[in-house]
Length: 261
Length: 357
Image (cartoon, rainbow over all chains, first blue to last red; front, side, top):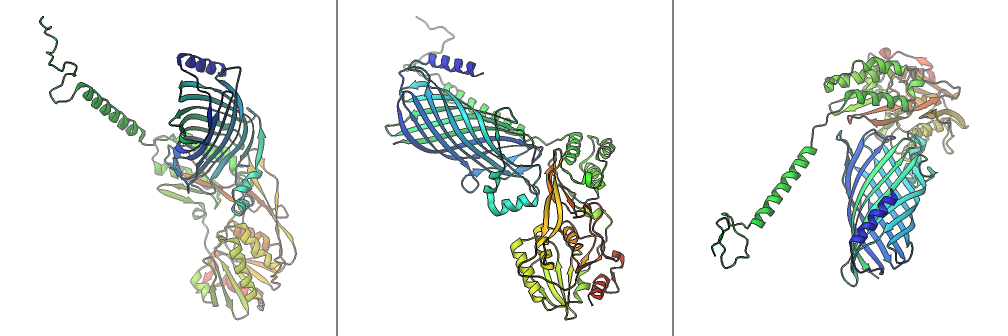
């Protein structure tokens, strides 16, 4: 699948004849977007919940001939952003949910004058939700090390596309530890807050009760000497099989206005 | 040269596109048509997405049955033949059942547990199992109130008073509310009762709450640590390891005088766990009726049709291994609920006072 994707990216690059622009000094940006979400967590409910939130985020981007550095922080937190209720087909709702994602990636071009990149990323993502019944809550808190593939497609002197594939290869997952919440757990949670959840975690390798991948396309447009516009559309997926299966699909759409330092 | 007859005659600005009779250019007309089609498409899209929810009753039943098999501690505790029960009610599931009939069918199945912790919530109806167990309350507030003086309402759940100027009375409607705040109230009450010759703790309608509130109240009645009970949660393969609960003596308060606890069929959940603790304390006697029959903690889940239900997920054992689930904690002195309130007298309270006198 990766080979086919790279072939498509290379062919796309071949069709676009333009001068290559490889140097993009560090810029920091602020922006927002839309997160489309679809989640089924059998340890909490047999129902699939879908909906959207409006995240806010900050990012940083830097590229020279050989290296691409990126980081991104995205937040959907009730007191900060709009997160509309996720709904099921049975018309039940998840009104209270929080989604936070932090990612740093470092890519290096492979070969001389190549627009193909290979690298890695460290990523932390947290998705917490409260269901509308007694003690109904669940979460995934994943901290992973990813392998990244990317290919830069230069469109003009001032713009490029960067499709990227990210595959987590090692993760530490915090999930609800059991099917049920007893008083000891709830007392710990009520007294110590979200920090009390950190002790419930497992190290996982791919395909051992866990799988995930991400694909996104970054569009970078230089607006002026100091300002850049970055847009991104992606597709994220993960599945965790303990204590019961949760599957999560996410289509993040982002737009950042970056200021070049 | 003459123009072809099918061509429109051109004027001096022959590069302008021709106009139709409404005055719109063809470009603009195409644009308006595209926008119209887009609006109609969007209306159809959103219109189509608002379809009426139709669910599969058989699949919903099966999922409910399987989930209860996975999460309920009561199947083992109460020795419920859950597979046979599922088979029996499954034959009555039909897709043409109306919502009320379907609810009634599921209600009948869930009542097989006879567990006060089993509830079901639909938009149009609610099942509270305790309303179907044939229990009779053995407490009437207005009757008991006649025995009390110096009544003080400490919180919505906690009331205290004096009886005959020498016996303290503490009423706990439930064990809900902030644990630290409730513990402070207990301390104030016991300080007030430090000179009494006995204490009545009335839990006849205590429908439970936090086990920590029950634990803090028991802590005032002993000066030594005791194993109180153990709990185990359901897992996918059975139960997890036993967690031991202890009665830890309160460092500031120890009530050494005789205590009578009043129980009944509406003493539920954490109220029943308190009763288990009371059976372990030498200075405590239980009068009234057997408790409701469910001590483990309760959880909730959704069904495929959006209804919700609750069940007991925790197995609770007394220190001697006794499981009171399905049975209830019996009193030391039994008075049938039907004989509890007669002629304006609270006979259970009076029996308790006799024991303390």
